[in-house]
Length: 84
Image 1: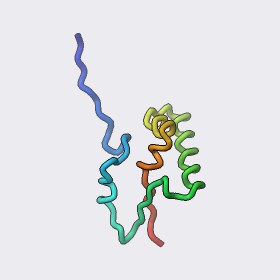
Image 2: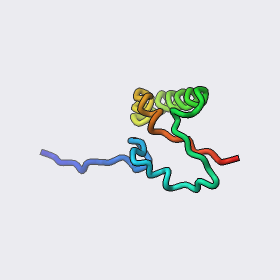
Image 3: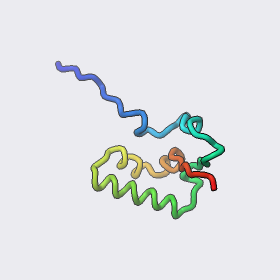
């Protein structure tokens, strides 16, 4: 029997940051962080559309999982934007 080392995805890939470590790695005086589910619907639809296009063009399993698990994605993905 052949044994292979189990490969793990890079830390910046899925699963999303369940422990909110990203929120500890930014400067709140410069940027605001908002869970995607709390963003405007048009922003959510833009992200979903881009994710769908990316999955279709690249065959990305991660993008496919995020797209098909959309309700979970809305709770786990954050939007980071500069403060005005």
